[in-house]
Image 1: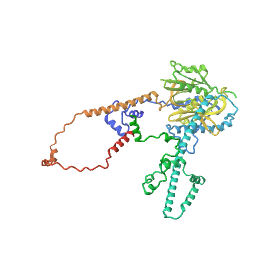
Image 2 (image 1 turned 180 degrees about the vertical axis):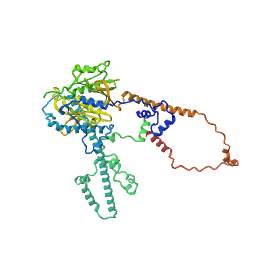
Image 3 (image 1 turned 30 degrees about the vertical axis):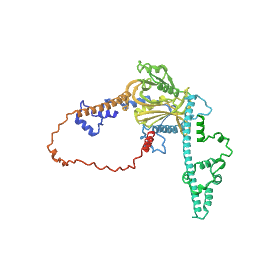
Image 4 (image 1 turned 90 degrees about the vertical axis):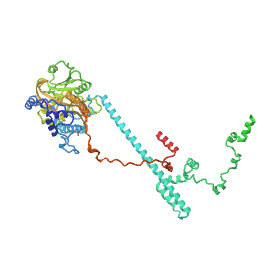
Length: 299
Length: 297
């Protein structure tokens, strides 16, 4: 924003600018598009180098280094950085880089000064039993510690939640994989059985296959599982709703199914069996004719 | 040992400072055991009155905070009887009490001062360096000081400004933690005398905060004015006289009228088209279902 002004500053000496001058300036690239704001510039900036040096000479105190403890140093050369040339390239806008450069400068100073102090017998490490007032009160330090702890806890919590989510996803994936594998095995098994039944292959290899494959995966639990079969609930549901897909062809009026009277229970049909709690006897509703007769008789 | 280096710094401010400045002042007083406090100075008095105040308190250095417009903070560093003084604009203040500054140091321990190599390159920076050293270093064997050296002040020149940081030295291998406070000094002028006298140096990169705010306002206004100007120009263009174009006799050269068709009168009803069922069109109940589904989506 200030750029707009300072660029036009260079050719705003005269009171009025002619169009040709403006065009020339634009061609040169001195003018940027948009409205240019004219800035007045201070005529001169005082820089009295001689005076400064004189003043410094008067002002300087001749003290021993131990009184002043000043160190002028460059930065600690970071092995990751590019070296001395990097210092000039520190971008003041890049906060992290800037703060790191300050940190490195402080480190360099400390590394230079500590040996000197040790030589002069100035203590730098506080002994553990030396208790004195600190610049920040204990209360303040407690607050800081609390804040750090809470931040760390929050991070840990989020990490744990993320891991749990990932694990659940993974678990789901594993589960679906296992189910698919089982279904595949079952299909293969059935196909092999059918083939044998149809007489295409008269080898009973599939039984062995099953053994080896199951042993390959899980030994003990797999055999148990095969023995028990599905859950009782599962078995009931299979019975009731079928395996899906097979329902359509299951009830044909074929000769066999017609002649098949195995599911006939005479006691149930003639209502002679032991009623379950006598419900049937209680809920026996008379037939249509009987009801109509009752109705007409009642009238 | 005997306390020989009799440095005393007076730290005080003018009226109208805000809480952050007040805390910064208090922090500086905590960190510098050789400092003295004073009441707020009235705005009416001129700046050279500060010299007398310092003499009364028997101080030979001074840090004076001046707040203007309740927004801008200026800091004067001065060597009071005759020495040089400097005026700075202070920005980006963070105090000791901020929870991100996790370090701590002994109250009154002596600081190590670390300077950028840039401070040796220019005469004005060299003078400033000397001023900083004399003000910020705690004299040895000062009665309120602690004999340990456990923190370091850094002064760095970046982006034409002086950045101040305070780190705690934890280990001998120079691992540091920031204690605070931290601020940025933007040099305005260096004077030969204390709070007055001829100007020795003026910072060409310094822009007063008023000027800065004014420029921002002007640029925003300029943008708006530019838009308006463009609009006006467009309006004028639109309203401008519409030029009447004369009739061009050569326009009709290529026009060929179409052939006249004979007039046909239909006496017999045309055959009805066979109804072809559109298999892609859904039946009514399917269409209704789709609509329902679409509505509930």
